[in-house]
Every structure is written in C-alpha cells, then in structure tokens.
Image 1: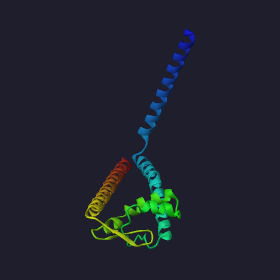
Image 2: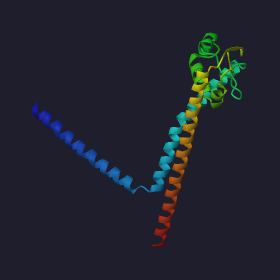
Image 3: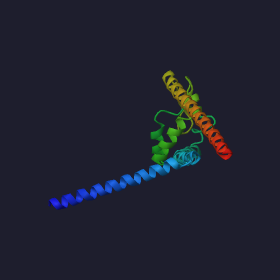
Image 4: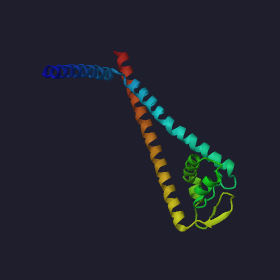
Length: 186
C-alpha cells in the first residue's frame, strides 16, 4: 500500500515539475511577443466581448419592435408616452407577445432616455389602447430624472474611457514607430 502511495507521490511531483517547465516556456514566449501583437490581440478580445452586448441589444430592440407593431397607440420610440403602472400584466394577459419578450421589451423601453424625459408631472400615463389612465406624479418624475442622470453619467464615463484608451493606443503606436526607426538606424 505504501509503495502505491510513494509511486503516486513521485508521479505527481514529476507532473508538477513538467507543468512548471511548460509554464516557464510559455512565459518566455509571451515576453518575446511584440507590443504591437499584444495590442492587436487585446483589440480582438475587446471585439469578441462586445458581441454578446450587441446581440442582447439587438434582441431587446426586436422585442420593442414587436410591442410597437402590436400596440402602436401605446408604444412609440420617437414620442414615447408614460406607461400605465401594471401594464406588464395587461400585456401578459393579452397574449400577443411572449412573457420573456414582454419583460425584455419593457425593460428596454422604460430605460430609453426619451421615455425618461417624457416622465414629467401631469403627463398622462397610457394603457394598451393608448387611452389616458393616470397622471405622472412628482415622485415618478424625480425617479425618472435620477435614472436619466445615471444614464448620462455612465455615457460620459464610457466616452472618457474610450478617449483615454485611444490616447494610450496612439502613444504606444508612436513609441513603437520611434523604436523601429531607431532600430533601422543601427
């Protein structure tokens, strides 16, 4: 029994040592990789991570389009109207659109900056037929304004981050081209 354990321990140590050697070789290869190639890989990775977000955005927009087609008096992206509280249950009961698409579409629709801007005190909320059913309260307006401010802040931060990354990439490119020019001289 102890010989088996010793054999397993020996095999494990040997495998660990082989793994460490492989890791060292890979790290050395990475160190030799050109900075430009790393930047290209980073760009490809960023593009790949952006795809799911765009795919979700497209699915969300498609769901909103379904609601617009089914209820043109209620849903309008150019001139959105505040929706009746509890409209989700009405949509589910009407059964024109699936529950999942309803949730996705409503979440997208009510986060739209134009919709949030339509939420002002005294504006009329509408039901599925487009009939006015209630007024927007001061609390509703305050909540919508806070959401709109959050949206604007996130957008501003995204733009700042994108500009920062662009400046860093340009700086790296200038440095790389200068280094290449120096290497060519010698």
